Each structure stands twice: as structure tokens, then as C-alpha cells.
Length: 471
Image (cartoon, rainbow, N blue to C red; front, top):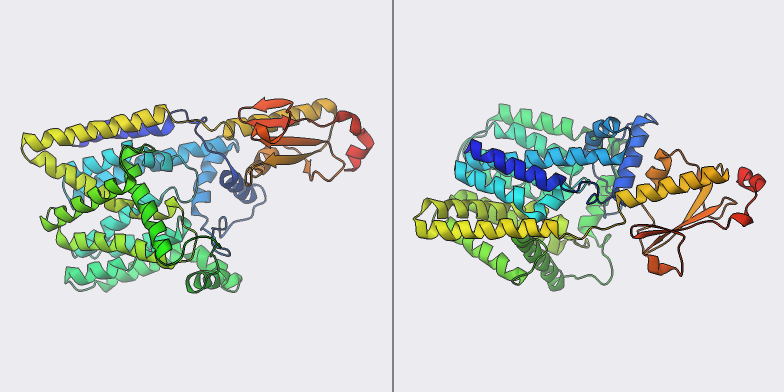
């Protein structure tokens, strides 16, 4: 089976580095990451937190930003270097699914899990996103594995669980909702707790959480209060979004969509709900037939349930990636299900092979036909470079930049201007104004085009050197 893993890893690598710069989605989050890393390396300001989440007053941890630092240094502060980081993390995630599922089930189930994660276009593009939530699948597979170890009475798992619980806030705080499942696993194991291993796990947890603890102590427990108010009140509720049964319906819509996307990518050959119900039926049959052990089946069912309940009750406006933590349930269902079909006679093996072929073809076709958003890294870097060259040619010591864009698309340029060593003022200053346009249809004319981005040059005759120098 290990020999078969190498082609799976190679396929996963190729899918994650195909057209690396063209498909590199560089926008506000990546620009902000660059600014944080610049703050650490240039300003010598060690960070205890990362960027603010969609819940006001709550921040992600700094770990993912520190992981990017070696790759920024390797590429001379070019943010494109982080493509190497997420690629390595993606390959390690593929290997992790193989390793963990081989221990929990069979070598073939491990290979199936690795193949599904390697090829699925949903996971491919999740792994290509340079954002703190990118390692969520890596975290969940190891957390499931450690929970399974507790279920089997292997108390050393508490050392791994302490580390995983301590770093979860660096990726997504919602991962905390599955932590209580460890207690369920401990009860189901019918074994005594090894307090030595548990104590080591608690120590590791405190060390891993120390940036959060230090930040909270220094800032009057700001995040703790924000988390409490977010859970207890409607602090993050956005008017017009669903509540009650409407919110439950919204949650299930996204659950259906994510479950379908794992197999079909962006295609919709059948309604999203059909794929979801087929997975649920398959999971139920695997548990009833004890192909998935019933104790583990209960853990996985509760894993699914806590996500549904939490996001239905919570007032936060839900997005698809919030639910990525439950995808390990679907990967378990698919990998164990395919393993079961391959164990049986040839009449079951053939449809399994056919389904895997369809899955692979759909994924590759989806990648090759993926529309390239020509307003990302390549275009932004080019437009910033052109503004610098034009300003230097005209003798401007500084410029100002205005934006005519759809909401949010005016963000994501600050780090690139800094990297070019430019002095950029507000457009209200006396500096020559360069206007970035997206999409082109926002204005009657543009002077330069950079993919989907447009540039309107300054009215040079309006500016004189003395006023520019003052500005």
C-alpha cells in the first residue's frame, strides 16, 4: 500500500501547484498577512494575535503567520513564497489521512482517504488558499485519530490532544465544539484515566495557548468577553440573515453544498441534497453493519450533530468554510465505504472503480476548466509596479491612490506598495492620483489594463513638483 501512496501524493502535489501564480488568490487577507509579517520582521514587533475574525473583538492566533515567515524570507519578502507553505501542508494532510485511517481502519481505507483528499477539487482549492483556516482538515484528521486512541484506551493520546486543543484558535475557534467528544470517547472506552498523560496534555495545552493567555491578561480579557457576548447575545447578528428554523435551513443548505462539492466540485449533476442523503445513508449502513465500529460511529454522529446545533443556535452569519471541520465525517464514510466494496466480490468492486474514475475525471476537468480570476496576485503586482515606474519617470517622490471598485476590492494593495518602497498618500493630498478600477465597467475609460484591473492615470498637468514635494 505504501508504494501506491507515492502516486497519490504526486497527484495531490501536481493538482496543488498547477498554474500556481495564475490561481493564487491574492486579496485583503493575504495583504494583511504580509503586513503582519512585515511588522514582525522589520518592526521587530512579535505578535500575540493574527487578524480579527468575522466576530468583532475575536482574533485568530499568530501561528499561521509565523509559519509563513521562512517562505517570505526565502523569496525576499514576496508573498508568492507562501504557495510553498500551503503546498507542503496540503501534502502532509494527504499523508496524515493515509496514516491515521490506516491505523483506525485498514491500509486500503487509509489509501482511499488519502486519494479522496488528494484529488477532490474542493480540498485542492481549500489547500491552495493562504489563509489561517487552510490547515483545518489537517487538524481534524489528527483530532479524530487522537479521539479514536482515547476510545481504544490509549491514554498517550492526551498528549496529542493537549497540543491540538492548544493550537485550534490559530485556525478556527469553532473547532473547539468537537473537543468535548474526547470525554464521550473516554466514557465509551471504559478505562481509567492515566493522570500522568493527562497532566502532560494539560501542560502542553497551556504552553500552546500561552499567546492567547498573555494577550488576554495584557488586554483585560478582551477576546474572552467578545466570545462570551458572541455566544450569549446577538452581537454578530446581521439583520436580514436567518434565525431559528430559517437558520437551521441555511445551515443544512451549506452542509448539502459542501458534501456535494467533495465529490462533484463546482458541478451540479444532481441536487446537492441527493449527495448528502446518499452519504448519510451510507454512513448509517456502515455503522449498522459494524464496518465502522459503533462507538466510533457514535463519535462521528455527534461530531456532525454538534456542528449543526452550534451554527443553528449561534447568531453569526454562516459561510461554507465554517463547516469544513465536519468534512472528516464524509471522508470517513467514503473511504471506509470504498474499502468495503473492494473487499467484496467483483460485482461490487467494478462499480466502486467506476465511481472513483468519475470522481477523478470530474476533478481534473474542473481544474482544467477553472476560470482564472484575473484580478489576483499577478495583476495586482503588475499594476503596483507600473504605478511606481510611471511615478519615477515623472519625478514624483510620492503618489496617492484612489479606488473605483466593488465593495472590498479596494483592499489588498498596501503590502505590495510597501514592498516596492513607495510613499503612498491619501487621495485628498496634493499627490498625483492614480485610480485603480475593478471591474472596467465602473468607468467610461481606462488608460491601462492589467487583466481585470484597470488604471486611470493622473492628469499630469494639474500637478507641480513643489506641491508634490510638500504633500
